[in-house]
Image (cartoon, rainbow, N blue to C red):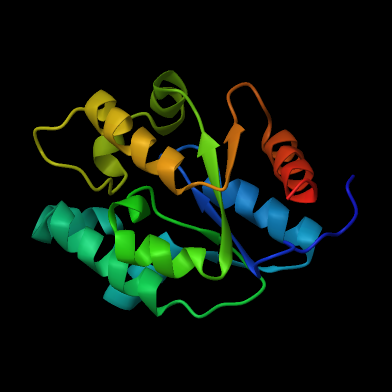
Length: 175
């Protein structure tokens, strides 16, 4: 295993990617390997709103969820943390700019087939999308945003969470 290494130019690692890409699981592994704290912003949103992401989408719509997510991300003032973001974090240029000031952004890239296999019935996941938007359309739209926002891109298909973690650690060494 790679020796403990803090990100050289920033204090945080932010994981972005589609639901089911492994952000939360890989985030915990990275935090352990790097001796950093861990935060899952979906859980921050749920705690702040006292309800699930799906309830927010069902009761108020996806745009309200995105607004709440933007607010929570912009309010983060963490140092030395791995931050697993919600899949829609990249829709907020303000939030991403805020995160980028203190973070290395890592895109956990998976194929649409992997997302479909891992999340199953995405209507139960609190995914921020238009009602008329298919998962394939959402995937294509977000993929561009993730790619544009990332400092590091890790192709995760066919890899275990531990292998993804190792690839991120190797990529950090070359920054």
